[in-house]
Image (cartoon, rainbow, N blue to C red; front, top):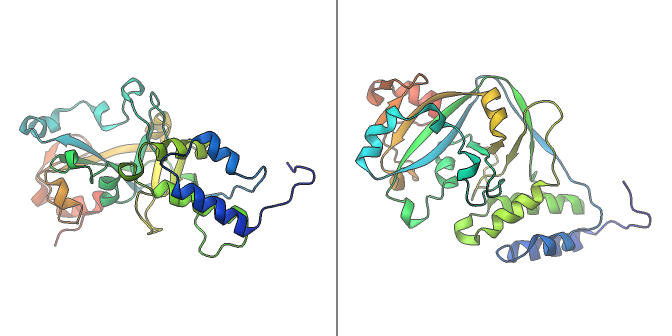
Length: 273
């Protein structure tokens, strides 16, 4: 609705505020952030479509213990899905403590970045990369639509949101998650389809890369588990030097990675040379 007498901000005013937010993202409270925003502005929505058969990926650190690697094929099926809400103790990009969200990406290396590969304690851990196949096509609102040439204030704020979502927490602190949660309140799930948002990935400007955040119940309805691979050398894998030591299919049967390279390529987007 329109506020009588309200005058839309100029691009220059919006740029000044957006730059201030991005420079102070580590210590800006949600209240201060809200006070900086104009009383009225257009929120721009983009959408993405995922058809049946599309592949989405999710990584998880599993430690350095040999026992963890040996037990990987004998985990419960539930361990390949969302964390129980009661075990979620910290903020995430689109979750608060005590709130479970099922995060995915469309690129294997991006999943490594999303689980904070830069943190020293994580570099020597093995990673399990899980594949999920879309079983019901869906459309999702995209948070932070990117504009290369802004023509009004609303596009400035959309670019600001895009940039803020790409900021890694290990550099900007947990507050970047608190602000991204606050910003998500300006967006709505589409009326038909799953409760899911798409959003910009950490540290990337490649617009082909995208992350997804599902409400867990809807993730189970729209996705099916599609298999896993274990990557023992996480640190080198970030630079595309990927070694797969263990693989299991969607029925949790062990398969030999060397004999199934085409399957790994098609279901995990990992190319071997």
